[in-house]
Image (cartoon, rainbow, N blue to C red; front, side, top):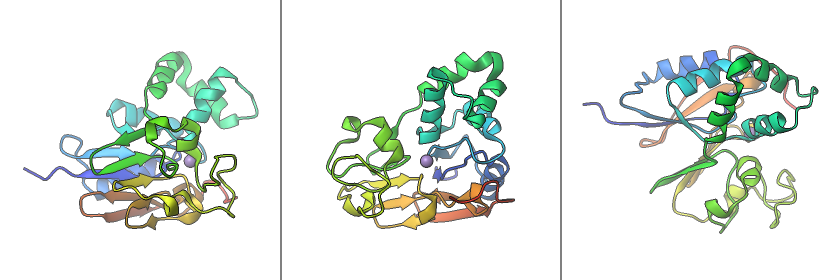
Amino acid sequence: MANKRTLIIGDVHGCFDELMELLKKVSFDKEVDRLILVGDLINKGPKSFDVLKWVRKNKIELVLGNHELGFLNFLQNPNPKYKNFVRLKEEMGEELLEWTAWLSSIPFFIEEDSFIVVHGGVIPEVPLHKTEPYILTQIRTWDGEGKDMRNKENPPWYELYKGDKTIIYGHWAAKGLNIREKTIGLDSGCCFGKKLSLLHLETREIIQVDAKEAYIKIG
Ligand SMILES: [Mn+2]
């Protein structure tokens, strides 16, 4: 019997074709492999709803990203200026309530004995279950309070992380693939025309596919 692999994929952002190509490249077998997505399945790229449908249909594990959280907030408080969300809601049509329930059931983190998957990152010294969801999905840098988690004057959260478990995250495309001893950042900017990345956790091997095009400009 084949060894069970743990495969973790970075921010897909609607890049459905690249996701399929990447899974084919690693001969993904859903009966054998454990697949986890780091969140931000939607927006920016062209096929958000296709990604969601495939993930839900195949019962793929994932953690919630800031874009999914934003969509859930949008449904509570719709604003037509969020055109991607308006379109996604239309695509869900009569199944909107089912989709909302499914999205609401997705955890903000997955924690196992040896690793953690979270979209943004963690606060140093604070347990995951005591950290606000918006921080788990959005943190990049840490100012000691969580007031501004994008300020580049402050250290990246992963430089402050002292835990034993390896943390696999996404959310920071500007940094690209970011492999450190205890933290692995997998957002390599597929929607910006770069690459979609997969980590084979047990071997720490990285497998990538190229974006078919730049669907959105950086910045
Ligand atoms: Mn993100």
